[in-house]
Image (cartoon, rainbow, N blue to C red; front, side, top):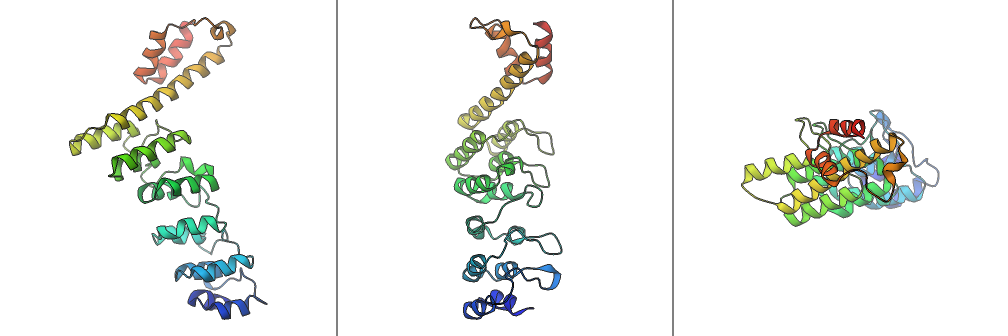
Length: 248
């Protein structure tokens, strides 16, 4: 192990400062690890900060394609997540698959916000079981006010309320399943997700109507009766959207 790695690994700030006068802060060791990865292994926060100040790149990967955030995820080091984001780590939706799901399961809303601020594409993140952030919140958050607030936050940020998990269940269906198993009731959460699904289908209807290129449909006087639109939306059936466009 090069001396700059040893100093980072042991948290020897004096030696690390000396080595960084001449050594590359991104110098590779065995298996392609960087000094930052060495610091993460032993949770040497001060050494990590010093390396960053000297130009170390937190987004470099080792020979296995893992960067510092990947190692933090693999070792379940939730307390390092915000620290990494604050020091320049950029989550990658492909390399860090499951990150947002992991954060949704264990972290507060502020952590989710930081991840999305650094990488908006992480909103579409899923884990190996095809659970998205909404499925995860509903299944594993046991504090209703905290869970409901997190669900509302993610929906406002663009989370898909119609996404399906591996069993083909939407978040709303997961809510109903969980309530059935636990013999609980949560009208508020169901309403949040139902409204979000309605909004998705309303948008789909609007897009189909727009594609018909009939300007009269967008006049001040409504052409489509409210009960027809409500029927399409509340049935949650995408095929009805196409049927509606053919009837107009």
